[in-house]
View 1: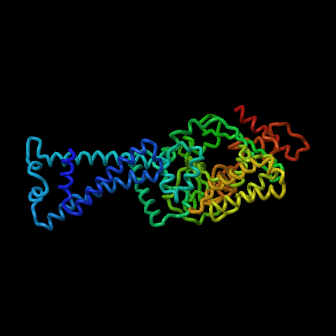
View 2: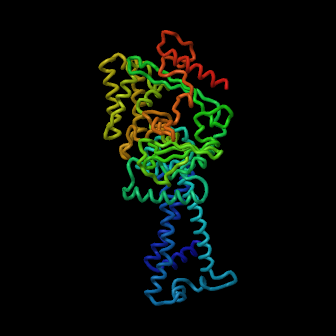
View 3: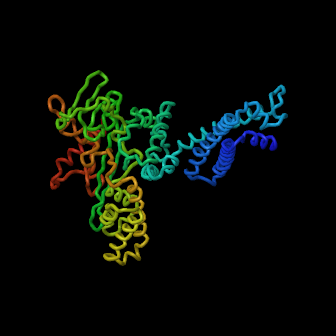
Length: 497
């Protein structure tokens, strides 16, 4: 068998081009088998090795296959010999002699063809499977996807594959994603991509094909208590509580309505925004299932024309725009780590100093890590030197936690800094809910879209010393007693509906 194989290789290596083709094909085939065995054994796990195994080597294999017949064609043209004369010259009489199953050469070519087809089929399937893995998406092009990979790994959807949202189902979606991926590779190669990556990502599949595979409006009912803790910048970092009963109904249940009314079956909300950025609305309209339409027009932008192709039907990602790649606000990030115990709440002025350490921008990650460490150590060394001994471990843990927060959210190579990617889940700084629920979007009789807080949540505490302040009895001494009573009654009325 070995002799036959060597004779065949010698025969097809008719010139330098053919010999190059044989070398490329054989070496890439052997290398891919070797690397795949190492992957199966768990020795190789790096995504860059996957690029070599499933993209580079199969490409070299195909190039080698093309070189072999091209070498024959070129040699035939230069020598003026016929194909039969070349075969007689390159192969023995026994290899060319015909029998019931054809000549030995014919059978060898057929076997190698089948092996090549099988090899390329397996390589193609493994390539597609590899490219669908999150580790490929996040690390194969680290300079671009580094920020997305960092936030993905600590997100609520870290066990959901990237392709589940970014590709969708069906052959059409697969083809579109590969074409888009090809353009991305070209953009990276020739440095054509924008930094940071612009949002919203208009190529995302509709949420009904992605999000609603796990979450669907019919199951959005009832309420959920959410307690938000913010810490003051005083010496003891005093906690302040905001407790909300989130009304998560979709409006399908009789007598109930809440946050997910916007995507309930009874309603369809459409809108157009300035430059299709989904931030400042030109108009919003509600289509009821009985055929009625109500439109609200932004009175500040009545002179702006819009592209009818940019009219959007509201879905999950209009509010949950950072469902996976969540970039934090520095103040909220510190509050979260204090509440989780990653930063010791008993350290004096820890909230103030922690925010001060990370809120600035630096030129490199190494410099940022060093300055964060120096900032915290210097403060406690100068003001509370005894704590370096009694609370040294807590201070070191706070430093490493803050460095991790900074490195997860700030990425210099892609110009990702604090606030670059706002989160619309909520209504901070006039964004989120207030994009539509504001005084500027009015109907034909100048009535604005409702913006009553209690449409979406009952408020049980608002930046209060206790988490359920408004469930207690109000006192006349409290200047906010009227609001206190109103919010308590609103919650009780909602709860018994």
